Amino acid sequence: MVGLTWSWAFTWEVLPMILSAAKVTLLATLLGSCLAVLVGLAFALIRRSRHRSIRSVIYWLVEFIRSTPLLVQIFFLYYVMPEFGISMSPLLTGVLALGLHYGAYLSEVFRSGIDGVEKGQWEASRALNLSMFDTYRDVILPQAIRPMIPATGNYIIAMFKETPQLSAITLLEMLQIAKIIGSENFRYLEPFTLVGILYLMFSIMAAYGIHMIENRFPKEGISLK
Amino acid sequence: MEFGEIVSVLLQGAIVTIKIVAMALPLAAAMAFIFGLMRLYGGFPLKQLAVVYIEFFRGTSALIQLYWIYFVLPLFGFSIDAMTAGVIALGLNIGAYGTEVVRGAISSVPKGQFEASIALNFTPSQSLRRIILPQALVGMIPPFGNLAIELVKATSLVSLITIADLTFKAKSLADMTLQVGEIFGVVLLLYFVISQCLALCFRYLEKRLSKGLGRGGVK
Image (tube, rainbow over all chains, first blue to last red):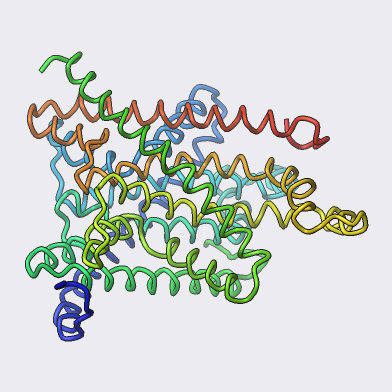
């Protein structure tokens, strides 16, 4: 049995390679979550539109994105977009797919966060003759952010854990590197276990970080000016 | 390739996907109940075991778990075929999320119900079976429905360990015919239909189970 025993020598040999691939994973997560927040906010605001048809288009779009696999969406963007003359690098495709997929999830979080702001706040803004933009920026969003933090954080951690799927379009992130190392050396035990442990560590740290942010965040909200 | 042919090949893949869902869903439900109850009522070692299971499977990504089960377990002498590895990995992964659903739903049953069942001299297992679970089950159904959709989506990962599911068929058809637009369009639509059907089933189930419980909130 070749692979039965854990080899520390091999572990130390592959660790630097996997850690350098972690940068790609983290970069994809970071860019993906920025995009997801923007997409989510846009969807959430459009869903508050006065027109029923616009609302229902966004509703079904969100429903569609949420109930189809990320992997297929990644393939779709990677293989179909070039037909329309848009070809993107694997990283860019991955970021776009992650951003859209989790943007759809986040739009629900943002929507309920905005709905959670008291009705009186809207009425007061109306009474003070604030424009729609000022109402959102100065009154509604600052109060809506704090309750949104835990759910948003959970989705960003979930996104982080879905980044290995980007290996399917040849992005060299942690799991792909681990697989290549494994097939070159016929030893899968150490690389895969290392990647698993790294993911676990990053997720636990991120979960702790989100908890800290939530606790530090002022209860009355922050000014967005 | 003609559109009809493409659809018929993809439908074969869809059947494999549905099969995997049908096998992994009961496994996930079983894991959710076993570990959820262990987490709530187990003694010290059992509780810790449940925590380790939950944290491990929720903290790492499903694809890594799948690769680990498929590539690493054979080295320990358990050789399993791709299908079994896929079902086990997805079942354990979704089951870990389900554990928290079970725990949350049981803890949200009012405390008076536990106290009343003690006052009426029910044994712990009787009170769980007859008093607590019937009430908790209704609350579990909507989040379980969401997890079932997560499971449908996660089945696409098994294509990466060479199971000929919907995604695998799509990928190989796309490589062969280059008609990527139609193929991936149909695939997205098929996944959407499967997910929506499951969601409908869970909505029906919720309606059935909430009958006679006198819960005002559930329609």
